[in-house]
Amino acid sequence: MFQKLTSRSLPSLNALRAFEAVARTGKVTLAAEELAVTPSAVSRQLKALEAALAVRLLTGPKHRLELTAAGRELAAQLTEAFGRIEAAVRATRQGGEDLHVAVNASISVKWLIPRLAGFQARHPDIRLHLTELAPHATAHRGAQAVVRIVPLARTAEPNCTAFIRNALGAVMSPDCAERAGGNLLKAPRLAAVTHPEAWPVFAELAGLELPNVAERPFAHVHFAMDAALAGLGAAVLSWPLCVEEVRQGRLVAPLGFHRAASAFALLTQPGAESRALRRFRDWLLEEGAKTPEPPPGP
Image 1 (cartoon, rainbow, N blue to C red):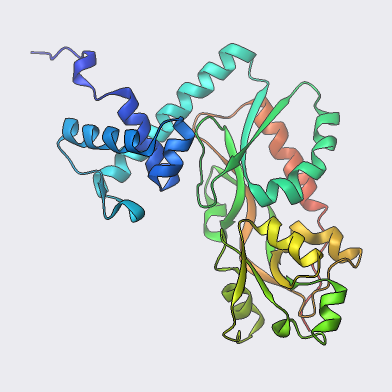
Image 2 (image 1 turned 120 degrees about the horizontal axis):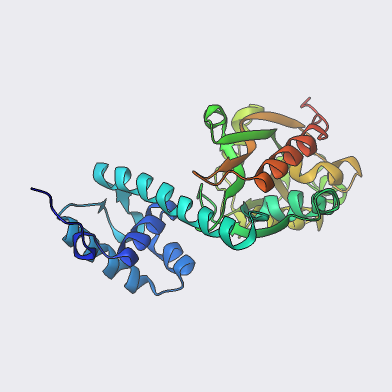
């Protein structure tokens, strides 16, 4: 009458982990890097899992995989399940006072890390571990929460805590502005490969038509920001990342900053709530409230 559940009734745990990582990161290469295996090993695990389940989980070419309906449903359940397992292990091993947070690189370098001394002074018993979050990922294996910019629509979700409303501005050094006659459209255009939409979104917000010129690419937003500080051209930045540089006059924003339909937010993973995470969330909200209003456009 009852079927006994054995290890042979379930697919390989490694295959499930590989699929969940691909579904979460969006790429086989990123999943392989996270799991410390080769991309070909991840691909083999995906094929084995689909064979074991007799259902397609992913579709499309290798460089642009998409989840099927069955894949989306399984991925959501696996992310929650692995998150709960890791939270339980952390709580058992360290009493819940280790906090693992994944952060987009530019937010980490230009906003979070410069403020961390205040958090550590207030909560010396919390051991905060930061991991780099892939540009478009909203979760990271082993992280209890992630910090990234999200669309405003996501801020209403129960696991999302927005702590700064985003605003975008095109900035450059005073020397670069002088060379361009104050016209940022005449300055070399610096762009982050991880956020190719920054210039088009800013242009729409500012009511500008961008000239058809070549952009100088940089791997991350903070690289483009450093290039702007060095006088290499103009870069579109989020206001929270360059507050001090603009206030100190190291960067100028001839067209000011414009409110974007996004926010800096903390996304909590299922089952990861803890005392340490609550303290970190409260601190983020306090720090976010200290952010001054951005200079408006002309």
